Every structure is written in structure tokens, then in C-alpha cells.
Length: 503
Ligand SMILES: Cc1cc2nc3c(=O)[nH]c(=O)nc-3n(C[C@H](O)[C@H](O)[C@H](O)COP(=O)(O)O)c2cc1C
Image 1 (cartoon, rainbow, N blue to C red):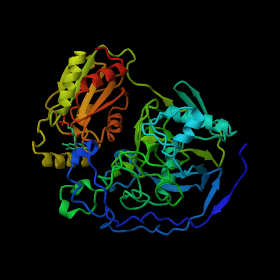
Image 2: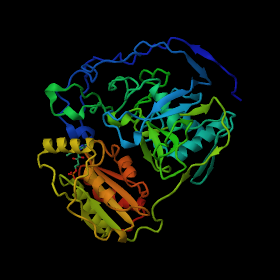
Image 3: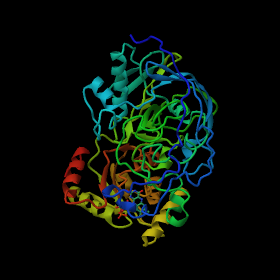
């Protein structure tokens, strides 16, 4: 039993979070992952933080870090969870509210592939390397891993897992996932800015889709006047702990992989809360922090992403915590599976396409399934000019606009499966897809997304869809680079099979 208290005083953890500021960017990205804005980064030099006001007071912060069995003791406290209304790129679901969290222990690192494989005997990761964070694990995998790791170390497992149903024994001493509140408290580490480093993270501070640092979008096409600069996009996870830690001594809280939390996604409960554990009922679990494939805006301390608990992604991994204060009772959030298990007989393929790529894919799906095809069109279409539509899309996304649709599905109640196609626009959905999702009732229906992209794959589009159609079930999604290549037919055929759709 590893219960020996090894309190190690690691004084003077001198943060070098801004050490990289001002270093010139040398890496230029090529290849398919970056084609969407190929050429646009060529002129960029310097770093995002070069010309931003530096309000950081933590550059040489001295912090006492207490470690027990390799985990950092996080001293609890009270903080504002969520983001202020004037925070750029915030979502409505980040309502600020006062939250208190008790002391807890948190691993300074994301769980590595070596650790995961040692415990479970398998490694589902998309990338390969023993020091890389494990990814492509579902929330259920993560909960199961917590229990197995607890047993291996002589702790009492925290979770009871029965199929899709998981309850959490708050008095158990084993490993568990952080609550959303614990995660955000730990990530902020006393800061109140969008990122704990208080500026847009540079590529030397976090592993993310660094072509798109925070606030670049607004002036992306005014290259002469950029106040934030693009930088290296690594297109992979990197060894955990490769960058400076946050003021609590935690590594990779922004970027590398997002991290599953315990909570079921829902609106924050009103009023001051102590050790909140999320809503009681819902359809998806929250993950936090952003990953190697996310734009900076989706790595913010307050940004909330979510996914079905039985799905994984190359962008999501695990960070473990343990109790420092023992609670009591069980928490048993209920996942309500939307969708119709008998689905499959009435399928609609609905898509929005600006440049035609999504249409090509939609037509191939139509060819293989014989399902009805529906194009989402606008009363006021976007400009035909590429640079102009980039700005228009940006504006609409920033304003959360709902462009008026000129086409409507008259018999939506007849369909139980909607295969939904769209292009990745600024790491999310084009706003016409939001208009479409808000026009109809999707409770009891299954939405199977497919996304045409220029390198960013889904971005955060699946979270955006889940937020707009929370009662729906989401099928296995497919991302296709532009309009695909010679394997398109086979790729679609395999994907349809995965979703149980007859061809
Ligand atoms: C306004 C706009 C924003 C885009 N943003 C992204 C992005 O963030 N990531 C990405 O990988 N591709 C992005 N792209 C590229 C498109 O996703 C890609 O070209 C897609 O194939 C377009 O599909 P369509 O021809 O059906 O419109 C963007 C394209 C446009 C026009």
C-alpha cells in the first residue's frame, strides 16, 4: 500500500512560462494538414505575445509544491468559474459563478501511453510513444483505467462501472477523474485570464494548432498589422511535461491532449457551489483544456467541450486526481442515451457546402445508401470570394449568428437518422448548420456528422453540434480532407458500416 506520506518540499519552482516570448518562429508548416491557409503563415514572424500587453505577474513566481506519491497537493479555495462576458470567443455556457473546491491531489502530468499500457495491456493511441499522452480513450475507458490503476497500487477503486452506468464513491481513496470545477481551479492556478499564462500561449508554452493563436482570427487577413502571429503546428502529441508548468506545477493544462472530467455536460447550476459534480442527467461528458489539434480559443481555461462517454478521440486523454479530503456518499450521474436504437430505415443526408467539396461527399453517400439528399441553402448566400467568405464566416461565428435558411425539410418527423455534412469553418461548424439544428427537434434521432476540412479535421465541430442538439444521439463521425481522394468510396462504405447503415 502506497499510503506513505512523502511530503517533499520542492521550493522555488521558478516558472519560465514566458521564456519563449519574443523568440522568432522558425518552423513553417507544409503538407496536407495545413493546406487550408497555406501561404498565409509565410509572412508571419515573431510571437503572439510580442506586441500584446504583458500583464503577467507570474513570470518568476515562487510556489511551494507538495507532492504525495507523485501527485501535487492542490490547496482548495474559492474562485470564479467560467469566463467574463467580455472574454473573446467565450460561449454562453461559461456563465461565471462562485465555486469552492476542497483540497485534492492532481497528477502533474497527463497519463502516458506507457502507464496506460502497463495497467490495461493495451494502447489505443493514434500516435505512438511511451512518453506521449494516451489518447483515443473514451470516458468509460478512462474510468475503467482509474479503477485498474487504483487496484494495482492498493487503493480502493472509486468507480462502480456497470455497462454504461458509472457511480463514484466519494469516500474511496483511489484514482479518479477531476470534476470540471477541480480541473478549472487547477488550470487557472489563481489567474483570472483566458489562459493561465495570461497571454495567448506561444508554441513554446503549449502544444496546439498554433497557426491560430488567440485573437488571430479578427485580423488574420491584415498580415501587415498582426498583433498576434501564427507559429508551429506540430500535428502530433508531444511527450508529457515538455513545456513549463502552470503556477501549481501542472504541465500541459492547455494543449497536448484535452482531459476527461467526471461531469456530465449541462448548464452550470445557479448560486454558490461547494465541490460541484455537474448535472444529474445528460447525454455527454465534459472534457477540458484543448489538445494538439485545437485553436487557442478552444484551450481557454473556461472552454467546455463534450462528447459521448463511449467515444474517444486522438485529441483527448486522461489526467488523474485523488481525494485529499474524503467525501461521503455516491454520485451517480445518469447518461440518457438519445437516438433510436431501431434507427436506420429513414435516413436524410443534409449538408451545407460553400465550395462544393461537402456536396461531392454527400452525393457519394447518397449513391451508396439511396437516402434522401437535402442541401442547406441561405436566403443571403456567402460571398463567392474566398478571402471575403473567411471574414464573413468569422464574423458570423463571433456573433453566433443564425443565417436565415432558404430551404426547409418539410417532413423531418419521418427521419430517424440525419447524416449531417458541413465544412470545417474556423475549427467549428458554419453557422448555417446552427440555424439548421435549431430549426428542428432532434430528440430521439441519431445525427451522424461528416466534415470536409482543410487540415483541421473536426476542430470543435462535434462539440458545437452536441451543444445545439443535446437530446440527439451522435453516430460515429467522419472527417474527409477536402473532397477526399481515390479511397473516398471505400472510406464512406466502411464508415456507413461502422454506423450500421445498409448499403
Ligand atoms: C470560411 C472558411 C473557414 C475555414 N476554416 C477552416 C478551418 O478552421 N480548418 C480547416 O481545416 N479548414 C478550414 N476551411 C477549409 C474548408 O473546411 C475546406 O476547404 C472544405 O473542403 C470546404 O468545403 P466546401 O467546399 O463544401 O465548402 C475553411 C474554409 C472556409 C471557406
